[in-house]
Image (cartoon, rainbow, N blue to C red; front, side):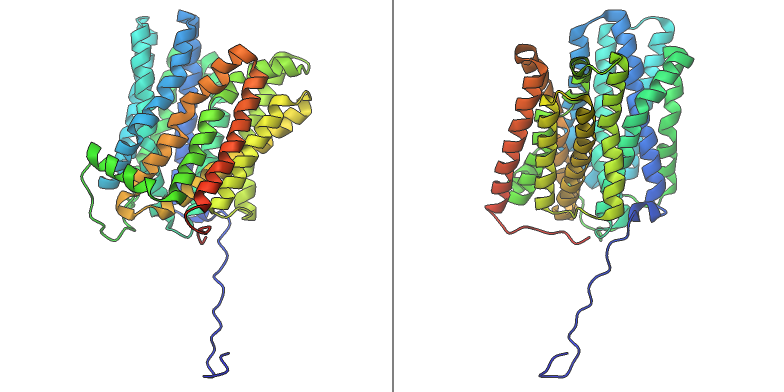
Length: 426
């Protein structure tokens, strides 16, 4: 009550965000399940094709190319694909990506069936698979925003990351079952079915990725326009800090942790090496799933720059401790904790970037983030993999995780040098 005018000046507090808001949304919910199945199909293809390629060619160089081909398209094409998502109907962009995934699986099946697979075939298909993944990313983020709006976007991004983690977690198990039960040829053909639910759902939804933008003019897609967006992003220290944080985790740890897991299972030595490896791999994946569900249920982490910094720093710290611990049970716990921190870091960073991006350039800005957070994953093969061949895997992972922690502190200082902490209401 205002003493001078006698009017009630009390401003009610906004309602707290709904828990599992994206799952309560009838438009977003089927997308999340469809995306989980498509991500599972992505990993099933890896399981089947990597096994066949190793059995047929026994090429370490080809094994290395498998990682590079998956992530380099994100590095070079994410901004351009973000421009496509900005200009066109995101439903069709994502469907094109899903169809490309299916065509690649079908091509593998034909080559397996006819016995005509050659190394150059494999290289082309591996690159096309990576291109499909890069094309999917920006359009997906715009669709999530369109489904739920600003207030519930943190829930949508976090749950989408959680459902994708489910796909990654179950993909190897289902892929192994298809490989053993149907064989590689019919297993890869059967894998096409898992891409269909998401593809068909996008014919039914009315959302395009742009319905909430209020008729913002759509700019043409071009290389120079992508350069313009890169220049504009560079001027915003908060956006730059989020992009740097995503890139740091990818470059210094990224995809190398899974490939290094057999060596850690052997060195930690807990009973059967195969069982130890399976448990470590499962712990690494389950952290993202459990973490996403816990964070969504509790609302502990809000989408702020500080949250992204803390969660990225914890991811580096947990990884560092994992690299040096001699205890197998502690290593399992550290992997789970690291999975929670990594999911929090990526989902918070992606949310902040989306909400700060201008509507007309949202896809391109997301593409810049994807270029860093996904495209730089190939670098972990150098920082952990190749460096590990020189100094040992424990040292290389430990030093890389330490570099991640230092880089996180520097990114936080960079963000603070320009503006106060920006909090996104959610």
